[in-house]
Image (cartoon, rainbow, N blue to C red; front, side, top):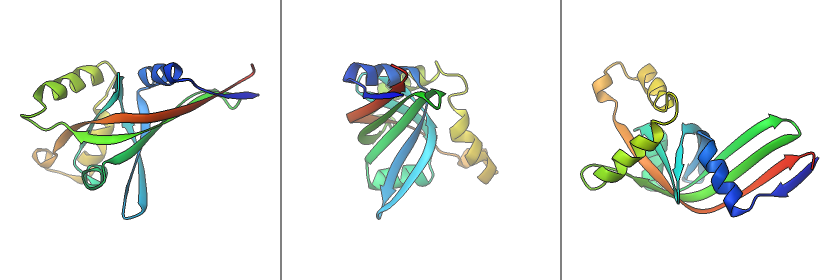
Length: 149
């Protein structure tokens, strides 16, 4: 098995292909990592969520990271870490950006499901579920690829 670093273009291509990532945030020196559906374009990763622990923590500390993988086998995989900054897209200031985020996310099957499924389990009044669109401005990224060559 050979492991090599990805160049920037390969990192961007991987971000464009993968729609499920893990989002890491932290508050008071406590990390928190959750799966999220993503859509990538240029320097941003877009996410749909609901208000809960991760959003509350990111509002306090906007420094976040994303980790994602493509795994073909134990010996053939690609992994990426992207560090960046959380930016919520509230109305009316970010109306165009929010619409763009939704358009990108809608290209992925059931893009909204992760965000709403957990909240529906906890909240019986669906009107109390507050949807949130946000993006992560990518500041740095690094990746590795393992293979036979």
